[in-house]
Image (cartoon, rainbow, N blue to C red; front, side, top):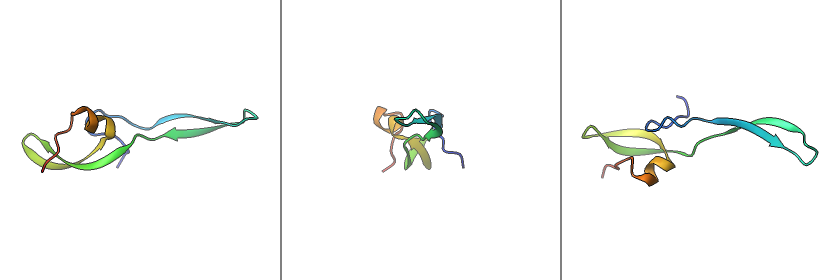
Length: 63
């Protein structure tokens, strides 16, 4: 399973670790994904979503 939000499609981004000596190594910025039980089309479904979608109200949590 790819590390991707099922709502907004947010994926890992790539960048660089830069040391004081300006040595550069590749690194990944992973999104903060959480597994939640949410309502989708009126049904409860387990989804992997980013915290941005949870906080903004794009995900309706199932009780």
